[in-house]
Image (tube, rainbow, N blue to C red):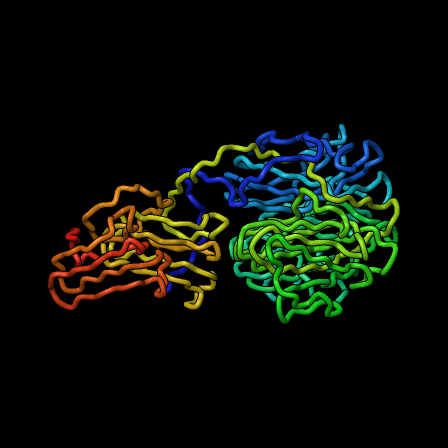
Length: 582
């Protein structure tokens, strides 16, 4: 029977490092390199002026790509100008094991620095600078202020649009921008917002656009059930000084913090989002160019024309604001976006893991032939690009080839992953649970587990499942492409499988790894009626992984030969104890 899926918090006895791994810490000038993780409840002040192409004076705000990796707990980062009081706002939300990027536009504070606060656990932070705004020209940076929070009991900067209730799938909500959180009541063309999705009940996306305009073919955030996902948005102010948010499916809470504003008709021209590229087969773009190209391959680069398309003029464009989404990745990796014709920088704009759709906003200078370049580091994936607006050539925004200003990660010798132990419930794979092999050493008869590709409660969302007929060991292989793993209390606790390299010559009821838990060879047992055994090439629970099996309808002597090339052998209680005889 299909069991209900309830998301629970992962109880970790010991933590592992991030899936993204650690290549090498290397900032543009050697400063803020390998400074060590930020501890929960503490703040790090980062110098941004005079580094990576940002001048030492005359800088009002900087555009940064901020990436969290190796977090040990669920929490958030807040980025704001050094010397100011920390605001009620968040820029990046994270959970254990996650690598999460988000773009930030932040005014420069005291000493040419910005402050970065981590709320919980310990977390490594990587910061790449994308460009800068001169003081008093083009962009008016603000201390971040919360303009909407649909969660019950939540607060906003002025109490408006607080606790309004989740956005229902297929509907949109409008909220006011002008005259709130430091945004003036008139003369505003576009606003920079950090938009966060939380508590989604289904997989879907959010679209943010100016109220009064038709909803565009575009997305700003993509989410799956149980995720908290942030992304920065630059959006023109619409009718009545409002902005609209559309939720595609399920119900979802939405949070928006304003980071600053652009005056009307100066500096930045905001556009109703338009799709410039979608490599997925059968999908559309605003002009059908760069549609259905097929996935990007790891190590390859796509050069994308951005001028003369989607409202961007053909000339006098300095930089473009884009929302870039990685979909259907088959491996863990990252995307880098930079101006075509320049060397690919040591920087990343978004990080992805298999099976997850990840968006992030990018501001990038226009390169050779009006193009920007997109590099994929690993696997294969589809790329989706929506244009949000553009900056003319001139003094308003000074786009840079991305440069790394900080990388807190400290290199360490490779170590085996530490063990996880967790109790019954439902866990999001790649979010609260790494893929891998897991063992329930003391499972009871009736232990039920399932690997899932969705959380809607339907049978077709079950990738594989099992209901054990014995008291003993249960082993499951969880794939990086799984969405979730669920098991009940009869299984006891699962933990990371650790090889013992001590193969036994007797087999008791349960699941065993050949060559580690048990030796290969021919085994005999005095089986009772109902004895079931199987040789398998994997512990993924799928029928195709069964090499051979048998179900005995009477009491008899049973014999099986287990090959050294087998991965596993599972036997139930009616088979009794098997003994190696040859």
